[in-house]
Image: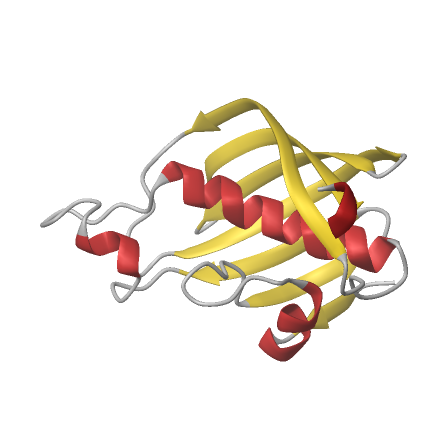
Length: 151
């Protein structure tokens, strides 16, 4: 089953809000398999003021964070719903991160996250970010879902 999600549905699946919400829409999601999400990169992003004045480039760590947020949506949909109020979703590890080219205002970041495996609340993903079909970043990620009391 593939689905799309608008921003209202994204907000139901992630605790992030402006300026740290980095997913605008989900193009397709296959619970237990993969997600393709979108981030529209605009000059109005608060990080462009300092990164870098006169030559705005989206920080690589925020591209990785956008991938992790897409992975979070995939985890909660794979588990059959929305996060519980006391759930906390953590980025637990990043391996093999590679950046191929800068992401700049006007780009639309397409985030593809493939679920490799999940065991006891720890999930492994293969992630890629593309602009106009070209890869701008790739990484492997580990994420974890825990109850807030365990945090």
